[in-house]
Image 1: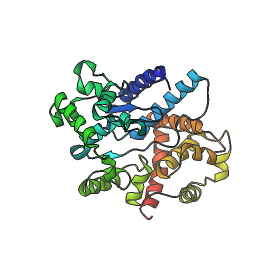
Image 2 (image 1 turned 90 degrees about the vertical axis):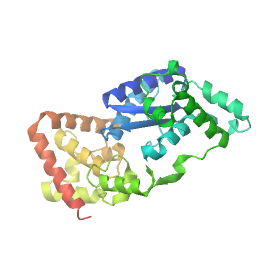
Image 3 (image 1 turned 90 degrees about the horizontal axis):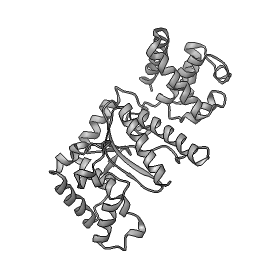
Image 4 (image 1 turned 45 degrees about the horizontal axis):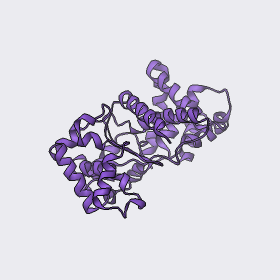
Length: 303
């Protein structure tokens, strides 16, 4: 990954933030990984990340004449209690460049200079207003600490003390907050889609097994696994099944593709995208999808 890749990364990130109305509070791009601190006001983190990762992977592969996946495994997301941990998480993100092993022998002042000079993070805009970027919302974090000078002192103090990572306090592998916050998240997740993070489903124990979904499809709608595997069959039906499996089962798009006759993950993504367009535009498709989903939710209540 060179500087040209990083510039394009930020450009595509800015487009995805605008498309999905996601707010970016902090970022850092390391050689082999990146961190984003975002607020998804529409609870669409998965869609946002999927869109951004697919676009960047496609561009990167085109530029470097390569193919295949760019990332190893699925991204890890944490739901953060803003009042208690937003400041700490922003500091954690910004200090990533000097947490590397070869940085440890350096003095505090040397490490601070390295992190200030690091060009691929949002820290510069937090320290100097003229270096602020349009894609980052600085106001919320700065208002919590008292402005740029105060944030500089806060970050320096964390480096000087070698402050522990806030993610040591994660609950249920996905929630960074106290018990009351985790309980409120658990209550909310009972009423919404469970796909945002697989581990969220462990909190409420309502994940449907693949066999359960397939048996419902066969019993209620006469849809067999063999029919789903048949190429050229009803695209709306296959898109519906792909969407429901992705939403209510712990399956990747690649795994779903194998159930649909050996499709790759991009084909599954396109199936689901076409379905979503039809759900917006076609009343009959929308009604049919709701019937399928209602049956699954009824079974979910009995799990």
